[in-house]
Image (cartoon, rainbow, N blue to C red; front, side, top):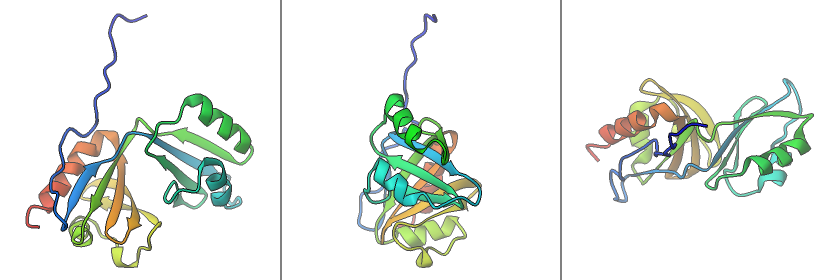
Amino acid sequence: MSDSELIHRPAIGSAAVRGSDAFAIRAMPEGTLIHILGRPGGEDLTEMLRHLFGDEANTVRPAGPGQWLLVRDEATSHVDLQAKFGKLAPHIFAVDQSHGRVRIEVTGYAVQSLLAKGMAIDLDSMDVGHSSMALMGHFSVHITRVASDHFELIVLRSFGQSLWDEIAYLSADL
């Protein structure tokens, strides 16, 4: 056994950049983030996943053909996850990404124009509840439209602070 003690430090150490109606940024809780992979060409498991993990808005998000992200603010114990995955075992493969990714919330009436500065994606055509993968600068970002003026970005943990700083830079003239 090691004599060292592990200390949990948040991936993003910054406070909110702006608190206006135009734009606000917030680090989301480091809760649960599971990448779920279905069988290639298999059935759509969205409803089954919602039934098992809860039907709250944006809990189960499409991440590609036969792939979903399970996102929750609260941490889920390993035992609870294993019990739920056991019910889906013949249908899925799941990878816990909770400690490997961070979520950043961006809101406000100017959020869409701000994000458009950094990513080449048509946010006007993205419906509420839909997700997409995009590059923002040189970071691969999973973006979900949570409401008309509310987006959530998911990025690898090691890029969290850099993405935060990039968004803060882009928001300088708001």
